[in-house]
Length: 118
Image 1 (spheres, rainbow, N blue to C red):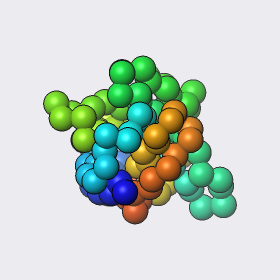
Image 2 (cartoon, rainbow, N blue to C red):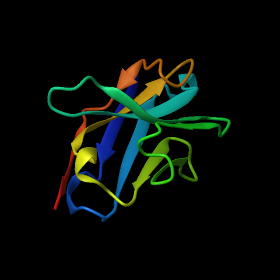
Image 3 (cartoon, helix red, strand yellow):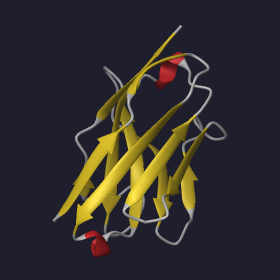
């Protein structure tokens, strides 16, 4: 079992920044990749960014150059630095862990709300 605990969401003005954190515990040796997903009202959940334990990353085109996913010094913590936030970034953001690869989640966090205002 893997448990994921998220923090860092909140309300921010357009153009501002937030940093989300995801702390993994339990059978973390099973994890090969971590990812951040988001879901806005009326839309499907989408993969925003992912990172393999070896360091390779993926970003959706909509956030490339603005957001950055990274491991902390201990690889049981994953950060998501979100800069130049836009109104369309408003969504519930979820941390996920995978035994295999990015885009194939096995474990989910509870989600944290990010709201961008004008």
